[in-house]
Image (tube, rainbow, N blue to C red; front, side, top):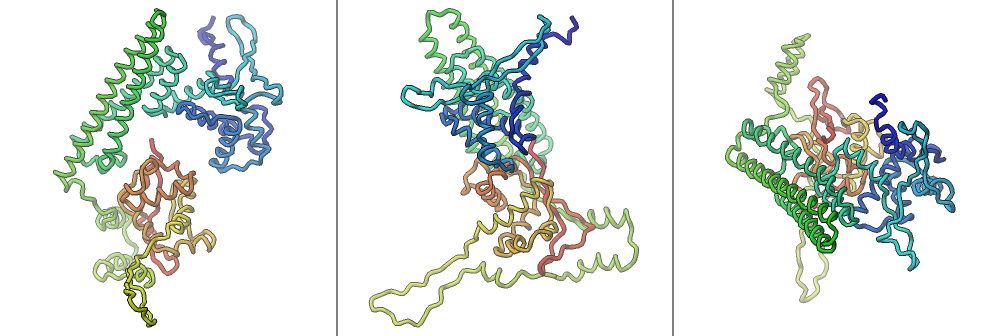
Length: 501
C-alpha cells in the first residue's frame, strides 16, 4: 500500500470533529462564523474545567455563546443563541440527544465506516442529578484533541496552564496522558530558556538592545515575576503530592506503580528545568537593572525627529528644493521660532488649585471657618470615551492619525475637547514605543499615563484586551503639513500597532 495511506483512518477520525463543528446549523447570517464561535466556547469550557469551575451547565454554555458573539462584534437573537448552544451539546432534537456522526474511509478494511462522537459529556464529579441538580458538562477526549491540535500549531499555553492540565489528568487517573503532557511542558521551558540565553548574550554585547526590545521591560515587574515563579513551584509541589497519595492508595497494583514512578521522574526533571529557567530570568533582570544604573548614558533617548537626518539628509539632499522660498520655510523656524498655537486659557486655568470663594454670610458664633482646597480631577469616563474610537480604528486598520478623527461625526470630535487630558495623551504617544502589558496588573502600579489609559479602556471595553502584548509606536511623516483642527496645529504623526509575537 502507498505510504500516503498509512494511518489515514486515524487522521480522518481526528479531523472529522473539526469538520463537523457547527455543520448544518440554521443560524442565518452567523453561518460563516459558527466554527469560530463554537471553538471559543470549547476553549472557555476547557479553562473552566482546568480551574475546577463547575459553571459548565447548559445555561452557562448559553451565556458563553452569547458573550463570545458580542466579543466578536456580531449580532444574534435568542433563537440563534439557543440553536448554537444545543448544536454543541447534541445533534438534532433535544429529546433524542443524539451524538454526532461522520463518515471516514478505513484504508485497512477498504470500506467506509461511521465515526460516532460528542464534543461535551456529563462531568460525573460535579453532576448531582439525585439531588435535583443540572448536568455539568466537560469536554470529551475528542474536543480536547481539537484544542491540543490547535495548541501544537499556536504554542499558546503558559507554564501554569500546562501544570493545571497535568493536575486535572492525574486527578482523573490519566497518568500516561499526564506524562505525555509533561513533554509539552518540558519543550516549552526549553524554548523559553533558549530565548533567555539568547537575550542574555545580546544584552551583554549590546546593552542598547534594552531600548529596542520593548518587550523586555521586566525590571519594574520583578516582584510579580517572582510571585509567578513561586506559584508555578507550588503547582509542582501539588502534583508531586498527588502522585505520592495515589502511590500509597494503589501499593498492590504493580503496573500502576510503574506508570506513577515514570510520571514522578518526569515531574522531577521538569521541576529542575523550571528552577533553572526561573533563576536565569531573575539573573537577567538583575543584570538589566545593573546596566541601567551603571550606564545611564546608554539609555538616553534620542529625539524622534532631527533636522539633519529627517530634513537635510533624507529630504533636501535626496530630492533637492524647487525654490529658495522652500529653503526659507525650512530654516526660518530655527532662527525665529513662533508658537502658532496656545492651549485655551480655560484648560490651563483648570489645571490650577484654587480656594473656594468666601461669601459675606453672617458667621455663626463658635464656628471655625475653613478654607478648603480642591484639586482638579480628570473625568476618565470622558477620556476613554474619546479614545475608544481611536482603538476601534487601530483594531481594524493598524494605524490612526487625528486626520481620521476629523472625519467622524461632530459629537465624537467634541469628546476630545471635554478634557484637556484627552489631547495631552495624544502628545504622550509621541515618545518611545509602548509594549502593552497592563491587563494583569493593578492600576496603582501603573506610572505611564498611556498605560493608565489602556488599562481603563480594557476594563470598560473588553474587546480592547486584544491589544495586550502588542506594541504601540508612532510614525512621523516629515513631508506632511501640520494638521489644523479646531484652532490647533498638530504634528503630523500617526499611532501604529504591531501585534505581539
